[in-house]
Image (cartoon, rainbow, N blue to C red; front, side, top):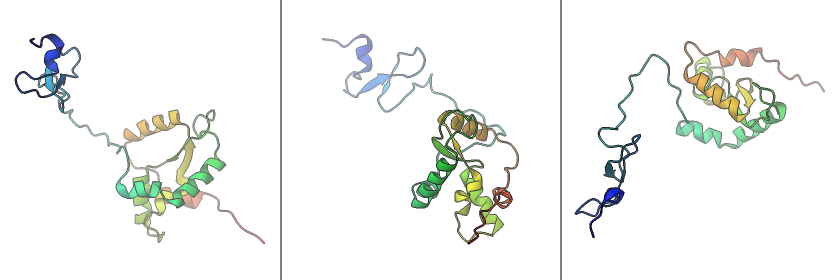
Length: 167
């Protein structure tokens, strides 16, 4: 029995290779299983503009910091001190966010030369805020389109009042 119709997309005639339907809108062409679009529907690279791209995800080093005990302790402190979202003030804090993106905060702290720890900028509480998921997504989108200089995280750290212990 001959294979016809959409079943033709499943088996490539003669070779038995697995095929699928192109993911292009309304396209029913058969493409190999490991290819998403046919040649006619393949998206073309968008020209880049002058807007800085925000990296989605961290480098391996920053990812390791996110999993560290030190981060978990600081994260707990931020959630405890800011139980409600810093932006909308209506939802519960779900994500501890870097006001200035972590990679930039680390670079600023290193350039300042004041901290012995190479990763000190990642852990500065003055650069951390508690956000709900909706506000975090909005803030990340704003970071993607940020133009110009970022605020200095070390200056914000210096301006924040320090706890004075008296015994």
